[in-house]
Image 1 (cartoon, helix red, strand yellow):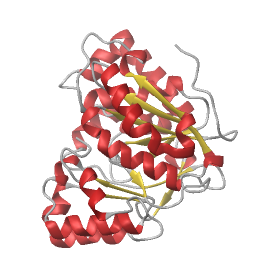
Image 2 (cartoon, rainbow, N blue to C red):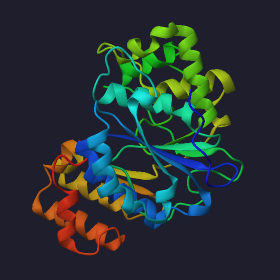
Image 3 (spheres, rainbow, N blue to C red):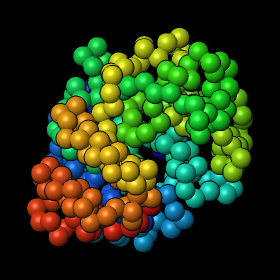
Length: 315
C-alpha cells in the first residue's frame, strides 16, 4: 500500500474522488471548472482522479492538457492515478463494475476525513463549504431512498454480505446516486470486512459479471452493522441535494422540467446529465441546459455548451 495522499485542507477535509476514462474527459472538464468556481479551498482535501482504462500515458496527456488547468486554484490538490496502482486483478472489467471496485479501493490512498464520491458527469452549481455535505455534529448529509424494482437484486446481495436483513431497510436506505459522501474510515472498514468474508479473491468475485453486490449498498450495510443505525453517520433530509437528467427524464417533457426546476432551487448543490440522455436532448432542452450553465457561470458563451453536450458526455 502506498502512503496516503497528503492532506492540503483542514483537519477533517472533504476529499473528492472521481473514477473516469477518456470518453468522459469533456464531462470531467466541466466538473473541474465547477470545482474551481464553487469549492471553498479552506474546506477542500485531496482531489483524486483515477483512470479506469488499460493505458495511462495517453489519458494523462489529455488530462493534463484539457482538464487539470480547469481546476484553477485547486490544481495543486489534484492527484491522478491509474487503476493498476490500486489493484491488479486477473481481468479488469471495463465500466460499471470496475468503477465501483475502484471507489472502494481508493479509500486506502486517502488521508482521514470524508470523501465525496463523484461521477464524471456531476458538476457543482452552488458554493460548496463545510456545511454543504456535513452537519454541525459531524454527520454527513443525505436523504432516504427505497430500492425496490430494478435495484432490489443488488440491494439484497449487498446487505447479505453483512448479514443485514432486507425488509426492515429496503424502503429507508441511503441513495445510490452521486455525489455521495462517506467517512473514509468507513469505506476502509467495509473493504477490510469484504476481504475477511471473500478472501484474497474478493477482486475477482466483485468483478464477475454475475456479481450483484454494489459499492454504496455494501458501505452502508457495513455502517449499519458497525453502528447499529445509519443515523449514526447521516442526517437525512427530506429531498435530494443533486439533480440528474436520466434518459427517462429527457423523454418526458414534464419530468425534464421538474429536474431543471430542482436544479434551480437553493438546496441543490450539483447537476448532471447521464450519458444515455445527452444524445436525446432536443433543441429546446439543449437551450435550457445551456441557459442554466450560463446562469451558474460555468460557461461564458453559449457556443461553449456544445463541448459538454456532445455525446458521449459522461459515457
